[in-house]
Length: 481
Ligand code: ARG
Image (spheres, rainbow, N blue to C red):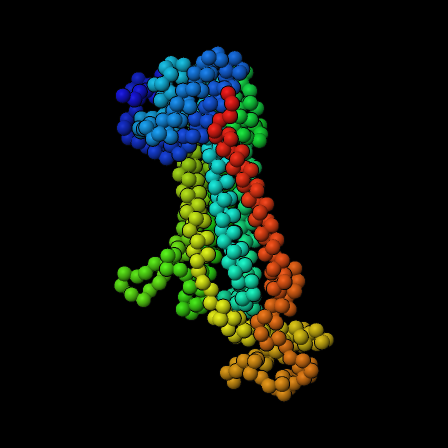
């Protein structure tokens, strides 16, 4: 029979009402912090022993007991109940069952307030790395698809109207650029999360000679917090993670919207693989881009979690408030939602087949080469505004006659402007893109260079991630006592 006494029960004459217990408990969701909680307690127990706050034997008993609790978690043989209230009390309860009364010494110089802040920071650091891995996976997929279509022109759009041709690879690299910023935000969030609040205790610090640097180093934190009130009241790192999730989600949503458009019969730039499409229960012909639609749709709740958390924090006086318990479900769901989306988009993209012919035809349709014609006039000395007017009139004339630039004879070009008597403007998408030979432009050589640079950056980012993941694994494994 599990011990159901509350850690805070001393001054209470009556036990908690079942409705309070159900409402108050976070064990149903904060059980996800159990590894971080145990690891944090191990660091605290070690430090208590080293500082002589508990005896070395007591510290060893606490640490051994905590590892046993973790082993039970790994073996799936430990169950928590609502009367455990939260993961911190649940772990301590089990520790007491295993090692006896000495378990009560673990909470010396510590409060659940600095404990939960420590646990959640540790968890968030891991989550940010998981998100980074997902972002890198999607970047790899985008680069691979871009590599498979290095010279395929497609229409570039503004206002969702065909504007000027671009290369598909250039378009895909635009998403790589967004995801690079997303990774940067994750790194930034990780840097700010990497601060240990442990030792701030309830709000004012501890009366024991604790070594905050020792616990921080043991847990792999880069620094310790500087103000005990802020340390237990600060959930900015949750906001940072949620904002990083939200910007990833907004990028995934935009990409997904393009996939939905491109997979439609109106565009038909790509065909999604059967394994990554769904059908209709009534219309036998349907093939739907559900993955992309869901990715677009799921962004809404990620944004919602950011807004929820801002709202949770905004009215809270210093220092800890129970409101903060609301931080976990929002953060967990935002991370889970972005991770599951990052898991499915790469294979969906990798297995899609682009229709080069459709894209190339659309790339030059609707007078998409009008700017190229105006640019040629401007290069030969015609003021650009005048060139714009001349080509604008030509577009109007051709549109009225239902013809395109490619249908005009050399004589007709000569009547548009004297310049065109000697040379004709670009009439193919490939000439048009090749002309945009500037850094950041869509000329094939520039896109090729951008692709190599993107591959180089991806390699560096992978190295960074492997190093951080190894450091995290070493911390979670616990190191020597
Ligand atoms: N379950 C609590 C939370 O998530 C843990 C901290 C409880 N602290 C307290 N003073 N009641 O925030």
